[in-house]
Image (cartoon, rainbow, N blue to C red; front, side, top):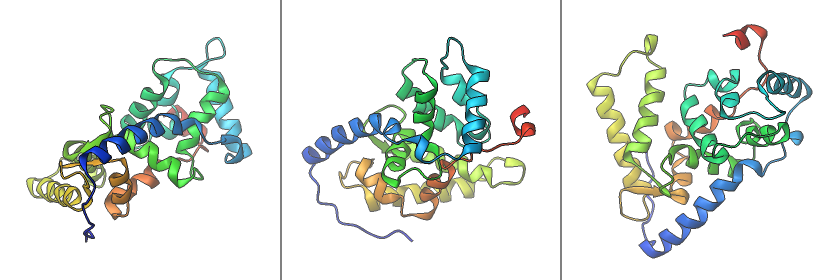
Length: 213
């Protein structure tokens, strides 16, 4: 059940926070030292993968898209879209590659992960997420639990829509049917939305078979 919170922030203050948070989310991905998190097996896997994808000692977005840990994720396109905003078409070195992957590591600091999750949903870099942003992801997650990933029934879709509506009503401090970054982070306390944290905590150890797949 959602927990009701107070709504007292003015639109002006929300705008200031939105701009500040947008800047934070744009820089958060490279703010974690991957070397302090990754173990030796993960390092070997990632170096092997980088070497298989590099050209002139650099890789582009496709190296992330095809990385087994990301490719097998049910929300891989959301993850890649967020990384795409960070890269802005650049090709990057191995150290940068590890830096960007750090936000997807299971030991990534919570606050950094929260910034990335918001950036992942805010595909248009609006500075907030709305019902459509959340609904698209919640529908994806629900479909993943279906037998053979079948389409959802009308009843299931309606249930998700009601959940998203209630989430906005509960956590929206702007009264504009949207969640700025601070609101979104508070909404992560809800189990279904909080699942994102686990879904973006990837395992960078994989088998040769999974690499071929």
